[in-house]
Length: 132
Image 1 (cartoon, helix red, strand yellow):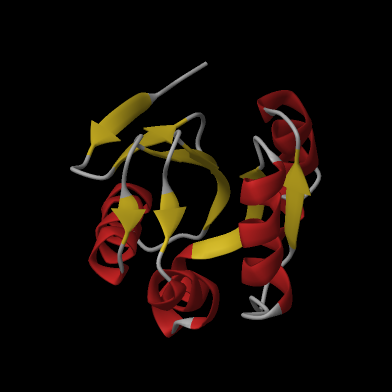
Image 2: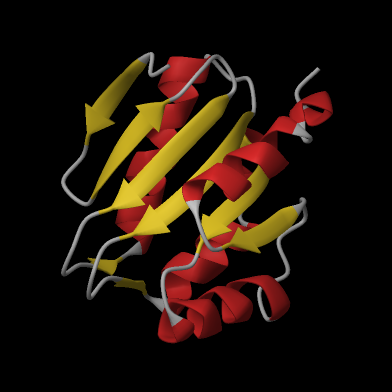
């Protein structure tokens, strides 16, 4: 069930249900701090200040700048809007980048990596208590 989606220049933010949001960063893009801020703004506007459970995927040839990873992990804005992250990793290179996000930037919330959408969603279902 998809409630609706918002198209931004760098990503599509899909509101799957009342609490789970899927952000897919588009192909051939270097994700910047501005892109992450735009994503958070879209989530904040839709959720009216309530935190969301976030599933993230990236397209082919897409990566995040180190500054964007740091902002997504540690900024006050990220912790204000996101309760938990499920990152879908599509290949070994992407898994390495996601490991940097988790281990180097150390987000202050639960975060896990998954090989597919279904396992990511199943884990996010177990994190709904963070929203209540």
